[in-house]
Length: 378
Ligand SMILES: [Zn+2]
Image (cartoon, rainbow, N blue to C red; front, side, top):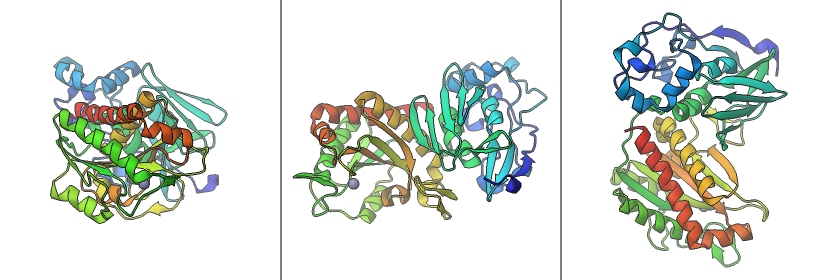
């Protein structure tokens, strides 16, 4: 990385923003940079968190709904010196000083070689220089940009702060709020499109078996549930997303199985790549917005907690939350995720995927993720 192309900068200091405890509802939660990314440039943007003691920041983050109801006027006095997050630009992208981001969240930052760790009483986040892999409380999430280092300063991509850390660590900042009532469950493939194959085992059948269980359980939880298919029928990708529009779905969940060389195994949850960010595994940036980008923050939160529940409940290897513009998750006008529930190409995992006990664990985990989101954004 060439130091010369870095440009030092500082995000404008904030005035007039209220600290967390001052807000009467989540709708009034403080905004960072502004609530609309198009209102940049950054130097005119606002960021604000008045200086409480670090432990107060974190407490406020993690028990936000409770605090909103308990906040007293005395706790609502803004302090005078707001925190600022410094940034640098590199190759047209904006990077934030990680040490400032850690402070912002009331976390301590330590470094060891290439590794950077944010730590608080409640959370541990690890990053590595030149890597897009982040581990947050033992769950992997692939960032849009590798962690950079310039003149001993560790830097994180601005969009990774805004669209990954913010929604997960501070769900009150998630916009828009999307109450989930109607859910469209989408078993991948079907009919002549069998999906991945291992011997006489077809992905389409495993997807359907898990999706049927998921739909049944979601109904029992009181959601309005539809399926793009409930039998072995072929249905185009376009019809699947149009179906979501037709029923005015609040959430679209696509169930798939992965395929690779026989030894590869593990679970992945996909959401759409944000605008101006690269998908996982590539540096090519998605310049245009897709319909799903309205829900980038919701998707990050949902996918993180779904992936967490999946690996906790099933014990299967964590291959992380990943962002890629698969057709059905980029063209949905509601929050959406595509879950690769395991590798059909791995014999042990295939046996597991066909096992009703494992299928129950998978469906319970997906429901955990949805309920977590619903409760966090009530
Ligand atoms: Zn598939």
